[in-house]
Amino acid sequence: MVTERLYQSNPYASENDAVVTGIREKNGMDVIACDTSVFYPEGGGQPSDTGNVSLNGSQQRFRITRAFDESLVGDVWHITDAPAGTFTPGDKVTLSIDRDFRFRNMQRHCGEHMLSGTMDTLFGGVNKGFHMGDEYITIDIDLGGRMLTDDELDLAERTVNEAIWADLPVTVTWFDDYESSLALPVRKKVPHDGKVSVVTVGDLHHPYDCIACCGTHPARSSEVGLLAIYKREPNKGMNRIYFDCGKAALSKLSTDSRLLAEAARRYSCSPADLIGRLDAEAESISALKARLAEMTAYIKDAEKEKILGSVRSTGASSYVYSSEILNADDLLKLGFSVINDVPGLFLILRQPESHTCLLLSSSEEHKCGALVKANVKNFNGKGGGRDDNARAIFPSTADMDAFIGEISSQK
View 1 (cartoon, helix red, strand yellow):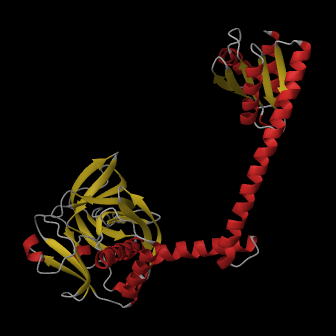
View 2 (cartoon, helix red, strand yellow):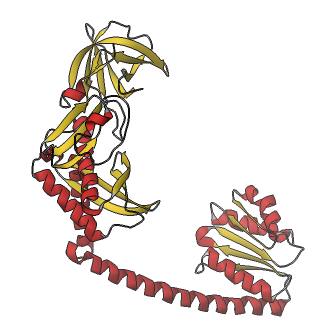
């Protein structure tokens, strides 16, 4: 006797009494099958129900973290957190699902059907992939390589919501085989063996959507509540659409609305004017970056002349230079510019703010990477590099300066 799947006849049922008919073990925990179950097993893009199992006649109650099956006509197995050996065949138990989680999945799955059907009706788009995640749902709509426009996404979202609010009936019709199911105008023909359940939104003969599906759905489209499309991005030549339905969509829209209001408040403008403010700020930042680049180039040229003047006047073969203005990458560019003009110079550049030290040399005598590797750990630092340049980073300026003192004494 295989599990009687109560969710098929009544997706609103949340609890049932049952008898344990099979037991397995996984990771030291009992996995049980029962003669009847309200639990929907994972499949068809919809996650499984979660919930509890109580052992009748005792106070023992355990979590069911996942339900699964191995075929649509086989047992439904329930993974529990009960230690192996807790259950035995014939035990009477009570199964109960997390009702809010089930209803959320009913809303989301039905909404996905309606959006996929809308994409087919409006644009001839074919759903080639469906995933119901924790934070959003995705579908991959194939339009032969064409990407949907923002206006088309808006039209699809508006069309679906109008159908949701029209309070259309949602009907599940069972057929003995695939060929019989074609009596209904199914959107997508997917041949398979065994019984077939077809979910129809709207009139059975002139539906809003009609497709084979083994998931759970509400009785009326209005129970979906609403559908919100979040974004669309290309994916393997298709349109990957991110969206959600019902309570999940309302929660995200409410959160996003509060974030938008707060962002507008900080810019002292209305939400409608926020994009304009952000565009203006982006232009200002771009201008500042260009000005900063000009000033950095000026400083590097001036500091290069300062270093060259000192080296040439003293004839030094090594030089230590420090800057609190230039960052490490700008210092590296400055260093290369200097050693290109002074062959054989061993140059040490220090950046106190980031506790970073740069070694540069154009001489075969000084192996910068080897110097760092041999000494950096003695001063709590890390780094590496090549013969002509290397970089070391330290937890403090004192460690950096001690390192510089050590390698300077080796020259």
